[in-house]
Image (cartoon, rainbow over all chains, first blue to last red):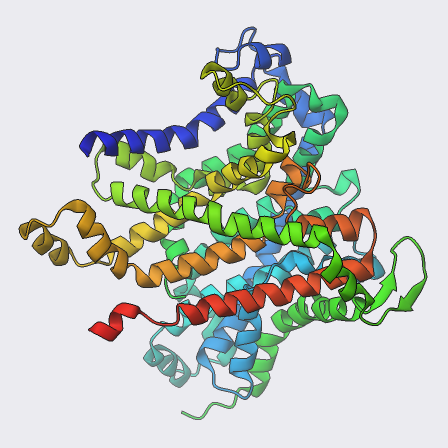
Amino acid sequence: MKVLRGLFLWACVLAVVLPLLWVVLGSFKPSLQVIADPWGLPSPFKPQNYREAWTEAAIGTGFLNSLIVTLTTLLILLPIGAMASYVLARFKFWGRTFIANTFLAGMMFPVFLVMIPLFLLMRTLGLTNSLGGLIIVYVAYSLSFTIFVLQGFFQAIPVELEEASLLDGCSESALFWRVMLPIAKPGLIVVGIFNAIGLWNEYGLALVLMTEKSQRTLPLAIADLSQTQQYQADYGALFAALVIVMVPLLILYWFIKDRLKESMLAGSLKG
Amino acid sequence: MQRRPGWFIAGFLAPALLLYVGLVLFPLQQAVQISFFQWRGTSSVVKPAGTANYQQVVRDPVFYEALGNNAWMAVVVGLVVFAVAMLAAHALKKRDRPAKILDALVLVPMAVSSVVAALLWQFMFHPQMGPVPELQKMLGLGEFQSGWLATPATALPAVGVALAWLSIGFYVVLFGAGMQQIPGEVMESADMDGIPGWAKFWRITWPLLWTVRRTAVIYWFISVMNTFAIVYLMTKGGPDHRTEVMLTYLYITAVENSQYGYGSALAVVNLVLVLAISGLLMWLMRRDPAEARA
């Protein structure tokens, strides 16, 4: 049993690491060596793959676009989402349950199903191929999850706190911005991390809404690269591009891995 | 305390509600409407079509093939994912070195995303450079002329491998948390009674994981129905629709073939199926069977 357990654990570790290691090794190799000697060390060592991927294959543009889209989306999404969650969690008013459930329903169906009308709508508004357009779509489609998680955090804040603040002459909005929002910070971090990963990686909606090369996000750029004939044989550059996509996520992952687990469970164990 | 913050509630809800209604709910309603029209995106002719699009869906063999592939992923890949995740979560309970290493890495595939996973595994199965065909040759198992992803019998399992690689981590963490909720005394007394490990798992761990299992099943179903990038980037649904799933078929119909009316009908049927099946799953698992005995 003990031996089996050890073998199983190491097999799992290898299953995660080996494919990634293979890509990292390959990203420093000339294309021919990728095929001839898949597990050997790179010789000659070819870091130019990265330059090629970054400039010629427009991975650089994609990286910048993804950075802008992800950060701006979070900057709009978090306050808007927190405001709605706060109201839904702490006030009783007509239609509250209905509105809360309507938001939750967004997590139950594949959002990609609305691609046709969404594309037509955005085209009518002149917002296809625009980073701004993609950002408001991302905000709209991230609201369900954001409100689902934040509502839980706001519900957990004791009532006495707001009563005391209101008696002190605090206005409703000051109560939210100065008292409640800082207390819900752990929740904001959780949804921030989750949405950041999801947005950085989002593929389907961007594929439908962004067709111009200069406006493409990183997942589109790298997917495109793998389908472009010219690069289909340039494995070194392809692997380098793949590493460029992964590295920011792996760095982020390393710093937040424990929090990531906690927050994943916060979102799912209740359900 | 008297609070009448009507304006405040409305003001705080408005931005989120406006965006959600305008960009999520309105398009959803539009999809239903468009599905009753004959509309090729390439022309400006839009004609009422009655239920013609729906009749076409019902007769479309590719629709059934895609549905079947989604079902295969949900059941076959699902069983593999759950079994491996359960074993891993169990093995991770003791905190020795290999356990700590795996624990640190377990969510890496999820963090690097389905696009990376798709491309990564496309290369892994690549007929010229892929380690998988390489290994297959080394073991003397022959090789597939056009590679795993272009061979009808192996394409879907190969996509399944990538999907499993991407997904397992989440369920390891979920099952692990479920196991932590089981009181230590229960296990200790089972140990003292000399109950063997296997029986302990089936008699104690498995039944007590009820809530977690329910969450896992519904999550898995929804994520399988959301599967798009991994299939589209690895195989585009080919060869000959052997790996087609609902969302790749919808994308190809809507975007590549510009069939807006028919695509919308596919989307609506898909939506109804997803809601009906997840509703059914929740109903089937509505309460803890162990509760009745307690």
